Image (cartoon, rainbow over all chains, first blue to last red):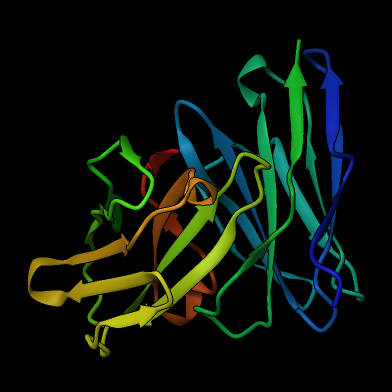
Length: 113
Length: 117
């Protein structure tokens, strides 16, 4: 069974631009979560989508948004990029329900200059 | 609010030594789940184990073992006879069992393990 895939793997953007990251979960998984990983803040939860609905949201500004499609694929968008948005963005999928183990993708490394 | 603390930022050992990683958590919930993940240099987080708060039975899986003690809010992880391939950052994580929590994970800061040959 294929794992979680994320595209693109690397991105370089300039301040003020916007970016869209994509995540394809493991087949059959209905929950997709997004996390931001930085050296200073560590791993932080962004949001979770389940059956196309945002189920939970972390403490990030409104510039961070996401959505999930009917095939469970998910995208996250960051508008008006800031230097501090430079991070590794990890997507994780799980069967659904709650408290299931999550399987992570390789991440998208975003650099904002 | 929930919190996970991994006091050890980095551990360096020589191959075949045992390594124990500490994890202490805080939560107001009586029902919760604890996880360990491994992040090798490639960057992808790898799931290792999940335990619920009602199951304090310790577990051994190959060279890995886990010690869950609810009384001290600790969920420690031991690698026996470490190998170079065990070099990675290890994360402890917590999720609440409330319906609204979904699959949200709160991670500790991670412990970097370096196994030298």
